[in-house]
Image (cartoon, rainbow, N blue to C red; front, side, top):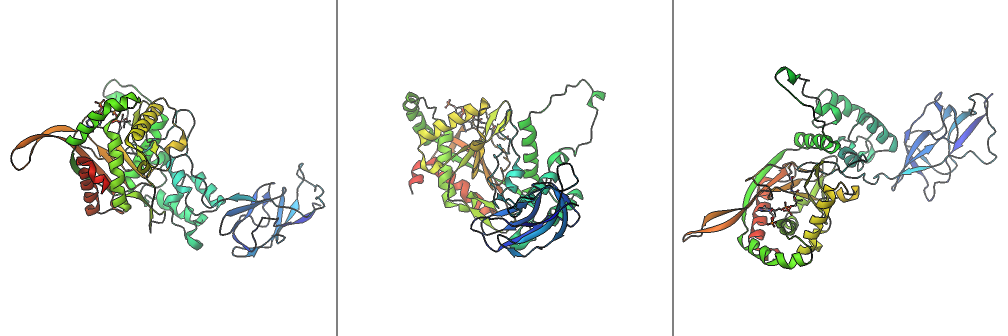
Length: 436
Ligand code: CAO
């Protein structure tokens, strides 16, 4: 007969009286070595206790809510040998479980590049999608994360009903049910979202050619769809008179060129954006996953939409507030060159607070960019053009830059958005505003 052994909680470091938040097995379950048995949660971490060997669970000695410490008996297990039948001898030391520690906030996975929506950086290697990134900040145990991953559920969209808002398995199940019934907007995207259009045989109407979408474009499509369908977007338009700024840029271009820097308008836009973000902190924020609060960011990392043959990438320029115009211009140049060569690192796509999408090099008078979640606003910039502007006495030719700010109306109200773009326009019209 297989020997029945007690599985006890091993040494888990400085933790004592740690709460059991999940019991993952029941009597009669066959488990393998390393199968998670229970989940513990302390102030600092969520930990799974795996089985020390294969066997059949006989009885369980702990329940959810219990507080346990090293040496507490968790359950009894009838040990199974490799052949499946009789028992292997148990080591003379007490049976030891090992601890797999998973911080409640796992390190974020590489962030997707979002254009006016996201596109994952990713030539060859497959990057995790935005839902994984968002979900990684959710409060959930490793087993619930696994469960959500299997179902393709973005934990960032699920409201937790457990203690301290923790997401339980039942919450994921309920969310999935709602999503399947169409009650959740922007939920489990995946293929479902993209297959809304019924297959049509276009060859009935004429000659066609099938061109597969790149991986970047496919992932971007999902992000765009999710952002567009789950965030109430409003776009605020404004114009900046950049005549003086352009004169200054032209005056500095040669000097910059001597340092191999192409001083384009984008560097000025980044700098001006920081001024506006500082005065409008809600624009530099993210909604908490339960939608009940705002995370205000005290750093200024700004993503720039870069068009490449693979699709759109949004590499992030860090600490824009601490950098000069030449350095910003050099970084824009370096990042866009690397993005186009497919050489952007995943970490360079992470951590953005706000995105600037400039179509100024191409043309157009305005567009409605799509927010790059978890950000709450994105600035679109179209091509500046000379226009006659009345100065009270007569018309004068002025260089006018169109600005388009799309914002999440749950977070930012219309007055704030208009204030943001107005301030941006003022700073760009007279860069001395940046000093105020
Ligand atoms: N108005 C007029 N001219 C502009 C301008 C504007 N708003 N913005 C840029 N230009 C000019 C530049 O100054 C440059 O001219 P000069 O050589 O005389 O200086 C020229 O247009 C080309 O600029 P650029 O686009 O190469 O450089 P940039 O720094 O302005 O932009 C980058 C860099 C990476 C943002 C840009 O190349 C790019 O990829 N833009 C596309 C982003 C995109 O697709 N967004 C849409 C997302 S929605 O799907």
